[in-house]
Length: 343
Ligand SMILES: [Cu+2]
Image 1 (spheres, rainbow, N blue to C red):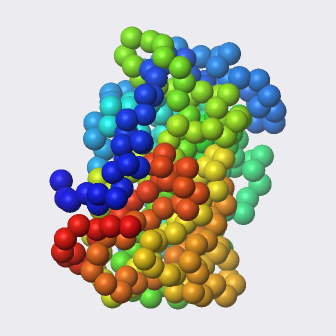
Image 2 (cartoon, helix red, strand yellow):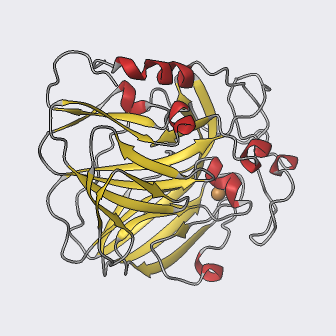
């Protein structure tokens, strides 16, 4: 393991040492229609013995952005699946996923690209797909897909940005809190300037009380409604890029696509020791220049462009520090820093 910045240890210990309880109940919602108001606990309906797949041990997920697309037409197929996901070391969660990963796969398009999308529901309850990058009738495209069934629809990416996608099945907070979200990047037609590019998806996990023989956690619906998460994470795992800092080249452009899946907490995105040269909200407008911190709303995204002036360890956080303490922290390792970082 690479050297861990010592000043982050209290945060890491707080996040990793949390007495997260095991549980057997979950937030299954087998019958609620899309329009149903989430006023009652979805734990009233359980998928109990449904297969949820093997545990994912020490998931290793690079933050690197996929390269810009080379074709203007894409066929994309996701399978909704319930799998075990390790939120933090030893904390295994019964996640609802796209393609068995939390977040789901990163998609990258250019303005004008056409996507033919297929969602296959391999899970035991209804799921669906809502692409924020699409302009489409939700009642047609974002319908619930029953277990074993599938849906197909087409959209054209018309607006550049860092977009969220998520399951839109009610209660939506339940399906997002359980892991069904991801990032879809749309580049301007002319492309973006060369840079070291990374994708971060911030999200939250709400763990239920102890139950069950296998110590797999699932969602505590009351915590979701109270916006009281146990973990706030980048790319699905608490503090993963503190444990394994992201290596970057100093004095060269860096671009971070940040999407905030929530379902509840705003991300006040900040890189310690850096000022953003440019922050691009979604759309065609002018960037904001010289920014220290930028709020990424729940269900939104932003593109952060900057460079690190010196070799060193540069933490990135949500500056809502309770959430950073719960795991929404990582580190950029610029060059080959000597000595031990401090803050
Ligand atoms: Cu779902």
